[in-house]
Length: 71
Image (tube, rainbow, N blue to C red; front, side, top):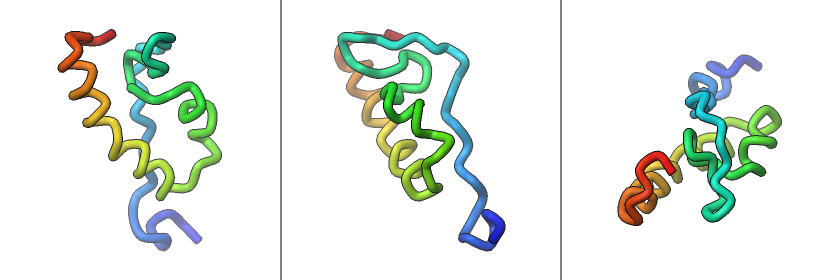
């Protein structure tokens, strides 16, 4: 079954090629995924990928409220 048959386009990686893990927060400063999420990305189904992507705006907002910018 193709991704379109399964209900839509495949979920693209949110990677921004700014691959630096912030150990204090546990997220990549570029894409805001955890190391576990990054490592598992290629094996996750689209529902799991969508769930991660859906969390990213809240992570970005939390980082900005802490004054973290890209950190």
